Image (cartoon, helix red, strand yellow):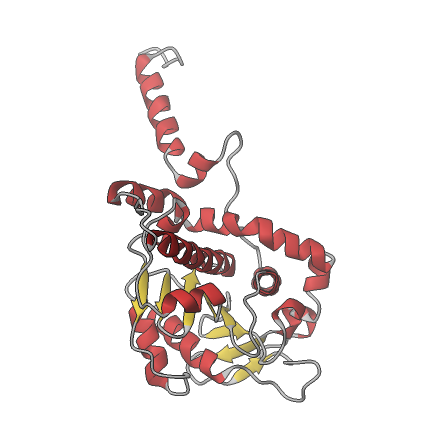
Length: 310
């Protein structure tokens, strides 16, 4: 009978080193010194998962408010329901982002637009979602049923300014490489979205796997596997537009731009675009908003009254 392999055995050492090397090469392992950082959480029930999603959705809206991504009734976020993938949660029309709680959200049927849960704006009778928002988000969710579970759109100052050029972003920084070959420019502005065609055209621009798009004369849109990811990517896209505008102003005075090489940009994209990493990227701001609101229970206000009526 052959003796059992020991840790001193060269074959065992080779296997161990190979496993460690493979683990270190994953994006989450690469960013974690010490214990491996935990990624997207799992939940034993749909109710618990839904509560988590809607709390983080409300926190993302409050983050948007803190960043100044608010302009009147414009802007919307949608998140696919974990139990019923044909339904999406959206914000009620005319409710300030900074005041939203989990219980304020409306649940819409993607196919028909029927509102099947939610009470809407607490000071306005009825349940009203943004019609243009529904048409945009409906089209995106239908076009990307497997990888897109959240969509963010708003009219930011830097986003609209850069969108006027109808140009993609240069890879000017390490951070913007998260959008390397993963963002589009939709340069066929068709006015306020009150018809299905414009929403479908925006969804087409995001195909097959773009994470965001610059909408000419309009604003920005991002998508993600979680609302945390989509929200973080939206902030990153807006800041990247602001940086691009600043760099263009300096370059106009004769200062040469330095662009990240394709090789480095591709590597940065690979290491920075993992869904678990992007979920974690969002958590500092999400946790800040939850703490500022008074804790998870405060942001969950109204959740228990959400009854889905299909």
